[in-house]
Image 1: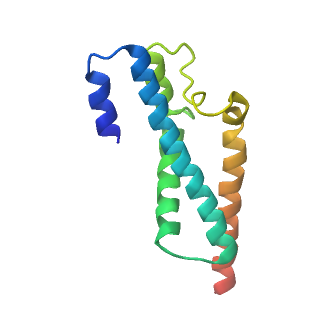
Image 2: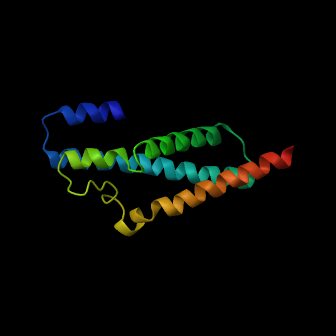
Length: 126
């Protein structure tokens, strides 16, 4: 997806359209990450250890590494700023700002809770 986003940005398209696409791609990634967080929590509670749990864990760990390696800022923020969004805010397209502002607290807590339950289950099996 990043490949196609890079190709799109190089096209001679108005910046407002580029910002829309950046925000759309960000929202799609966000939705997949939220689904992954809920699946991790579900799998931990139901003790379901399948490929989807491992895919969710891998994607969320990768996202966390990218986020922290980028100084606790979404990489799409700088891209949005580059094309004219004053704040570089990429979460405002399809969700209210109040939800976007608290997303890390809410979903970060659910992610950690899922990991803790998985660890407790792992040690209970031993």
